[in-house]
Length: 181
Image 1 (cartoon, rainbow, N blue to C red):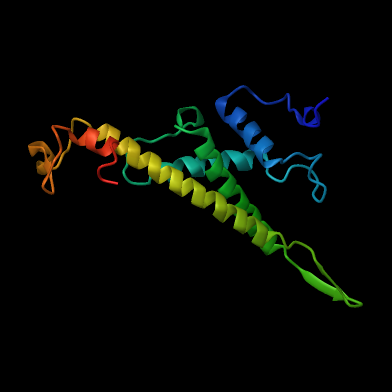
Image 2: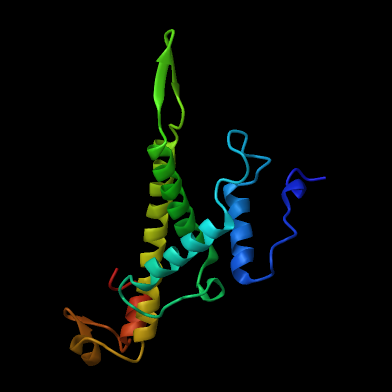
């Protein structure tokens, strides 16, 4: 028997959002049996639902405004969404741990009750960087693909870019070939 079979949750609905939350919990290893220092799961399903909404909103307001993804099942990359949700979850956890941090000493021994905020923030920043890089590459690529047959520079329409004969290539082909990179 696999060690994770004990963590399988049979009560989830089969909605795409609940499946995504289950996958997030598996990826983040947020199961009561694995959380030795806290009682139960660290993030409740309601928290993940909020984090998903926040991640979808972040993506929707980032220029260029191509389209709005308001549902998990429509989002272009589950991994990209997971990075953002993890970043938001860890920031949320860091807020809680920072608020509840208490250091005390007795007899030369110092104890910190809740000192995980810096670790959570470091992880959140790491996931956020990955998310932003991948998001911007995806948006740039999609924006270029959707501009095909649309807006071009007058130089491209003439087949010349800074004195370079584009060999009859249109703007889409030039972007795809990496000419502007």
